[in-house]
Figure 1 (cartoon, rainbow, N blue to C red):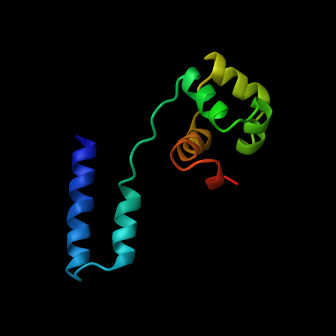
Figure 2 (cartoon, rainbow, N blue to C red):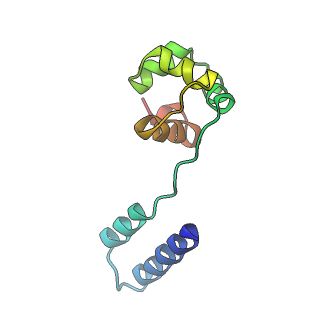
Length: 101
Protein backbone atom coordinates (compact mmCIF):
# COMPACT_ATOMS: atom_id res chain seq x y z
CA UNK A 1 0.00 0.00 0.00
CA UNK A 2 2.89 2.37 0.77
CA UNK A 3 4.08 2.20 -2.83
CA UNK A 4 0.69 3.14 -4.25
CA UNK A 5 0.37 6.11 -1.88
CA UNK A 6 3.90 7.20 -2.69
CA UNK A 7 3.25 6.97 -6.44
CA UNK A 8 -0.01 8.85 -6.09
CA UNK A 9 1.53 11.70 -4.11
CA UNK A 10 4.53 11.97 -6.42
CA UNK A 11 2.32 11.89 -9.51
CA UNK A 12 -0.01 14.57 -8.14
CA UNK A 13 2.84 16.89 -7.20
CA UNK A 14 4.46 16.32 -10.62
CA UNK A 15 1.19 17.30 -12.30
CA UNK A 16 0.99 20.42 -10.14
CA UNK A 17 4.60 21.19 -11.10
CA UNK A 18 3.74 20.85 -14.79
CA UNK A 19 0.90 23.34 -14.27
CA UNK A 20 3.26 25.78 -12.58
CA UNK A 21 1.54 25.49 -9.19
CA UNK A 22 4.45 23.75 -7.44
CA UNK A 23 8.09 24.74 -7.93
CA UNK A 24 10.90 22.34 -8.87
CA UNK A 25 12.45 22.40 -5.39
CA UNK A 26 9.20 21.28 -3.78
CA UNK A 27 8.83 18.53 -6.38
CA UNK A 28 12.35 17.25 -5.65
CA UNK A 29 11.69 17.38 -1.91
CA UNK A 30 8.50 15.32 -2.30
CA UNK A 31 10.27 12.84 -4.58
CA UNK A 32 13.09 12.42 -2.04
CA UNK A 33 10.55 11.69 0.71
CA UNK A 34 8.93 9.02 -1.44
CA UNK A 35 12.06 7.03 -2.24
CA UNK A 36 11.48 3.31 -2.69
CA UNK A 37 12.55 0.96 0.05
CA UNK A 38 15.84 -0.78 -0.50
CA UNK A 39 15.43 -4.52 -0.97
CA UNK A 40 17.25 -7.19 0.98
CA UNK A 41 20.17 -8.95 -0.67
CA UNK A 42 20.77 -12.70 -0.51
CA UNK A 43 24.34 -14.01 -0.20
CA UNK A 44 24.20 -15.20 -3.82
CA UNK A 45 22.93 -11.82 -5.02
CA UNK A 46 25.75 -9.97 -3.22
CA UNK A 47 28.38 -12.29 -4.69
CA UNK A 48 26.76 -11.91 -8.11
CA UNK A 49 26.92 -8.11 -7.97
CA UNK A 50 30.55 -8.22 -6.86
CA UNK A 51 31.52 -10.66 -9.61
CA UNK A 52 29.59 -8.71 -12.25
CA UNK A 53 31.95 -5.80 -11.64
CA UNK A 54 34.98 -8.09 -11.39
CA UNK A 55 35.78 -7.05 -7.82
CA UNK A 56 37.56 -9.12 -5.23
CA UNK A 57 36.03 -9.23 -1.77
CA UNK A 58 38.84 -6.95 -0.59
CA UNK A 59 38.17 -4.43 -3.37
CA UNK A 60 34.45 -4.35 -2.62
CA UNK A 61 35.19 -3.95 1.09
CA UNK A 62 37.49 -1.03 0.35
CA UNK A 63 34.86 0.60 -1.87
CA UNK A 64 32.23 0.28 0.88
CA UNK A 65 34.72 1.24 3.64
CA UNK A 66 34.12 -2.02 5.51
CA UNK A 67 36.30 -5.02 6.33
CA UNK A 68 36.90 -7.88 3.92
CA UNK A 69 35.55 -10.26 6.54
CA UNK A 70 32.23 -8.39 6.46
CA UNK A 71 31.90 -9.01 2.72
CA UNK A 72 32.82 -12.66 3.32
CA UNK A 73 30.14 -12.93 6.02
CA UNK A 74 27.55 -11.39 3.69
CA UNK A 75 28.37 -13.91 0.97
CA UNK A 76 28.31 -16.81 3.44
CA UNK A 77 24.96 -15.68 4.85
CA UNK A 78 26.36 -15.13 8.34
CA UNK A 79 25.60 -11.41 8.25
CA UNK A 80 23.34 -9.10 6.22
CA UNK A 81 24.20 -5.65 4.85
CA UNK A 82 22.37 -2.79 6.54
CA UNK A 83 22.22 0.98 6.35
CA UNK A 84 24.72 2.63 4.05
CA UNK A 85 26.11 -0.68 2.78
CA UNK A 86 22.65 -1.80 1.68
CA UNK A 87 22.15 1.53 -0.13
CA UNK A 88 25.56 1.24 -1.79
CA UNK A 89 24.69 -2.25 -3.05
CA UNK A 90 21.46 -0.86 -4.49
CA UNK A 91 23.24 2.02 -6.23
CA UNK A 92 25.97 -0.28 -7.53
CA UNK A 93 23.43 -2.75 -8.90
CA UNK A 94 21.22 -0.10 -10.55
CA UNK A 95 23.76 2.48 -11.70
CA UNK A 96 27.04 0.63 -11.93
CA UNK A 97 30.43 0.95 -10.37
CA UNK A 98 31.06 4.43 -11.79
CA UNK A 99 28.33 5.84 -9.56
CA UNK A 100 30.42 4.92 -6.51
CA UNK A 101 33.88 6.03 -7.62
